[in-house]
Amino acid sequence: MKRLLALVCFVLTMFTSTCFAEKVEYFEPNYNFKNIQKVFLEFSYKPEPDGVTEKLAESIFEEQVNKDLLVPGKLKNATVTIDGNQKESSDLQVKVELCAFAVDTHYEEGHMETMPCFRTAYCLTRGGHVAFVDVPTVEHYYIPGHNVTVAHCVVNFYGVDTKTGKIVWKRIDDACRVVDGDLVNKGKAIFRKCISSFDKDLKKKLKK
Image (cartoon, rainbow, N blue to C red; front, side, top):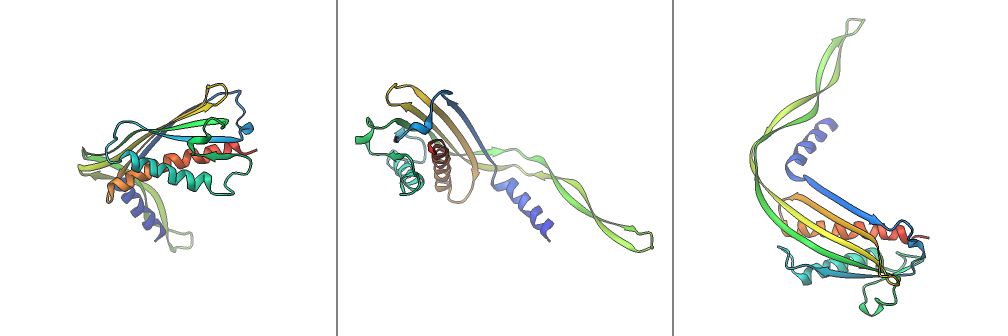
């Protein structure tokens, strides 16, 4: 039964949850992030990505940052702020730039998929009894052509040392995912995940 459930999940995954994510990062090798006392995060928005307004994108950013970094107790040895009045007093300024956000549909041609599975076989034991065994194998399935809706999001992160004005951390997070149902909200979820992933790594770097 467990093997059958896994098999069904695999088939559903082929149709509904294909995803892709790529991160490109640069760190200044001699920069000591553990000396940072205050980080200022600033949201930036490029001209009107499809499916999300600047106001909505900024609210998603602030909500996720509040959840990950601004709740008391999240950081012990440093503080993070999105208050513009504290920008110049920070040690590190991080510009979070939403470069692309789109939900598009395209046609995917039919193709073959190979899927692992089990075949039940039987054999005779030395005592002449019949024993059943599961033999691993593969099966080939044809996936018919169909329309695929893809949410795509690109977010750039620039960490700049306030004193020197030098970029010490740069990340490009490029993510897309095949979605269905509530398309725009699922696209927003990808943007949230990009922010959350950066927040998690920032906490690690600030940890003394």
